[in-house]
Length: 225
Image (cartoon, rainbow, N blue to C red; front, side, top):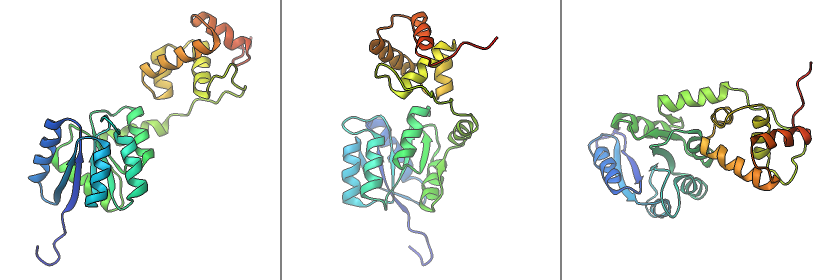
């Protein structure tokens, strides 16, 4: 290395799919500014490799066995703060994005990112900036520009969580599962889970009963004439 030349960023790749993991390693091996020092098949192994190799950056998949990418990110940022994490995943939904960022990831890319985009993200997080793909930046801006749902003032009955109560109120307001999912920035499957849970806790059988229940508990009020 000549004087003044930047040392390459030392990177660990974590992905449970062997073909994908090996493909990313091969791609990065062809690019300047990056040196792959290890590869992990799950989050547990990623944490171990960080402890052993002290890389500059981990390229972290999210859906992995034993220890998923969010938990691995949380552990790495807590125990080895000298290592940054850039998520590299198939998923760009809110339930993947925001937990990863809260866990300490400084970058977030989807797997359609090219090699140059990955290198830019690595360089960005090492310089103290965020390494986010344009689509993720747009998603964050959309989320920040949308007002949060108004909190329910009445204490939740029957052991309902705040989110279950929120879903119940939106049902009473006539929203469909898809509309609730968009409003709360979650998946439709998550909305269905909340509905199943609140039905089980309250003994409700259908949405009509849920509407009557919400009004009866004072969670929503009839519109003024």
